[in-house]
Image (cartoon, rainbow, N blue to C red):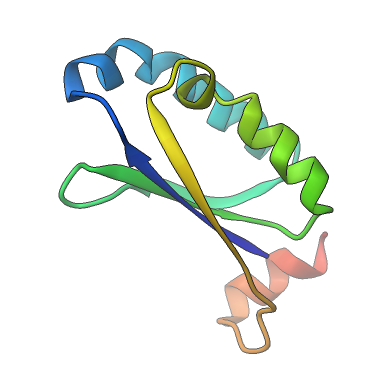
Length: 97
């Protein structure tokens, strides 16, 4: 699995200009079965995405397709990990992968 931490590198006005396109991209990733959870950081300095396991080059392509990446709105920090202990609800999601 991956934890994707986005950090805004522009003013929130610029973030808001691209936000709808980013949210549409997020929806596409859920439909494709790639994402498990996502949302904004508090305070609003970026966001966090929990992504299912996939080849790293595939993940890099997904990140590159984000309007926030294409428009220079946010940078990504990617942490890969192996979930060895999970809540029952998450384990059920992972079994469907």
